[in-house]
Every structure is written in C-alpha cells, then in structure tokens.
Length: 185
Image 1 (cartoon, rainbow, N blue to C red):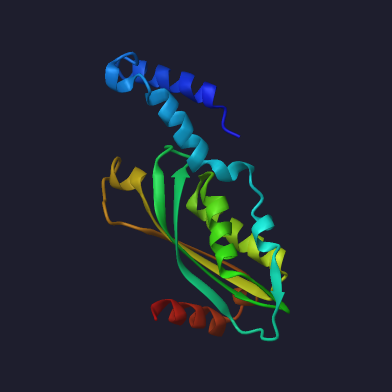
Image 2 (tube, rainbow, N blue to C red):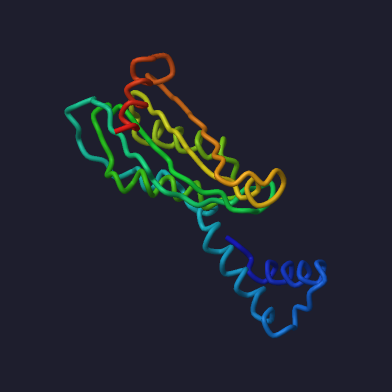
C-alpha cells in the first residue's frame, strides 16, 4: 500500500530540489495528485495475481489458448518512468481453462508494480503455469520504455521484446512456432 503522506512529502522535496516553489499556484496540489496517481498505478503491489486465475472451467481439449494484444502500462523501477505495450499469453490446458479476462487481469496485477520488463514476463508465465496447472505457457511482452525514448539515448519508437516459456513450450519448437504464427494473424 502506498503511503500517500510520505509520497506528498517526497514530491514537495523534489519540487524544491529542481528549483520550483511547491507553494506556487500551479503546484500547490501537485504532491497530493502525484500521491493519488502512485496509489493507482502501483495498485498491483498488494494484489495476488493468483486470485484472478483461480476461477476455472473444465476443458476437454488440450489445444492452445492464446490471448494476444493485452495492453498494459507499467513503471520502470530504475527511473520511475512509464513503459507500456502489449502482452501475449498462450497456454496448453490440462483439464481446465480460465476466463480470458482473467489473463488480462493477471497482466494488470504484475504491471501495476515497480517493474523490469524481463521480470514482468516471467511473473506472468509463472502465475499462469502455477495457477492453471497447465502443460505449458508462453508469454511475449512488447513494450516501449520512456526512459529510452524521452531521455538517455532518445530513441522514440524503439521497443523491447521479452519471451518466457514454461513446460511444453520450453523444448517444443513446433509449439513455439505455432505461437508466433498465431500472433501474426
């Protein structure tokens, strides 16, 4: 849980540190607004992603399930700047499936934390694998990092792609290729 009072104190100090007057008309409410914003964008820190995947349904097929283009917004733990993009999740059911919205909610829980994209990708894969007890899972995350596009090397439009494979996907190139082909359609 975000301690909004501490965040407000920190933002006042930050404003002073960059040479601003926190009592200036346009900045008076900024510490409060920023604290509320962090409470919202970091709400996943106190959530258990497994709670969303716990609702399952019997499945007679073990065919691949793919949910693609799940939009997310996260915050880079290195610069406290946003990164955003899309997550794609495929899994091989072993007797049970979850509602498709539950996969999106799982992405949301992990994205609403201070994050690294590599960790985010693995956390999603581990949660789906563990909670659904599936035969395998593959997750791809594509994201643009504002710490690369707005500052530093300043390369807008560049994206980072990370992939995590668990279970059957780890060694089965045919399954991996099927995942990539399904993403293209």
